[in-house]
Amino acid sequence: MACRRLTRSVAPRLALAVIAVVIGAAPTRAARADIVMMADENDITISENQVDQWIFRNSSTSNSPKGKLDDALQTHISLIANTVGLTDEQRKRLELAGKGDIARFWSLVVRLKQKYPGGRMSQEKFNQMWQEVQPLTTRFAAGLHGRYSLFEKMLPGILSESQLQAYTAEEKARRVRHFRAKVEATVQILDQRVPMTDAQRKKFIELTVTKTEPPLAFGQNDFYLILWRMSQIPEADLRPVFDEEEWKVLNVQLDQVRGMRQWVEQMEGKIEEDPNNPAPAIAF
Image (cartoon, rainbow, N blue to C red):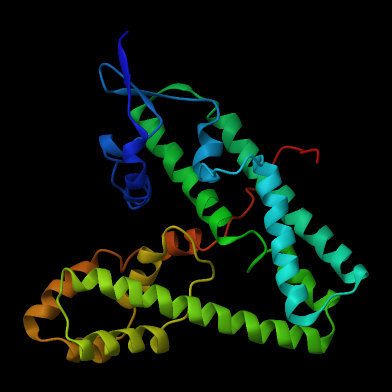
């Protein structure tokens, strides 16, 4: 049967396709980068390493997926060491906790690869695969050792009280700075649909930063995570910033994400094991 391959030039649209699937829409045909589509366009063929490429974002580094996870752990530990200083014993204990997070994450990757080993599949199965890949892609992009991780749970028992206070304060400040930058970028995008004055943009940004909390994790879906938070700002606070026509247009955008709490929680890294389907044993 004849088939054709989509080129890498459409890869930038891939992230939008992922979001579309997660919130209920099928990915566009043009966004299926690196996928072979059968001539009848009802079935799709993916390569055996496609799941790895999606989760680990086709990094240009020669490192293996496991190598990228190990490098990310060492970078995270170095960040803590640079902030509060670490003894050799503390570093070893943090490495052990981090390896536990890596093992847990890798077991989920392996399970997904076993479920979707590559080859031909229906459009329905492809869409289901997208939905299952997305949380892992987001978790990898955001980092494995933040909120809800074994690494984070072990910190209070590894760092001294003064170290923990210093690290917690620096981490909170970093997240707030990152959050504000993401909010500013999101307002810029919305400004294309709802042109705002400088005063309106500043007020919108301040309301989002002060009336909502930063995401538990940042990643490729930050626009939607921030937009959902904007939708949770009390209307009594936000609506007076805009005139009637501006509010109607903006409210349409916010309405699209108001019911996405479960998706938001999933995207922020709350990846839980299924007790009825335990992860396969993985040797490191």
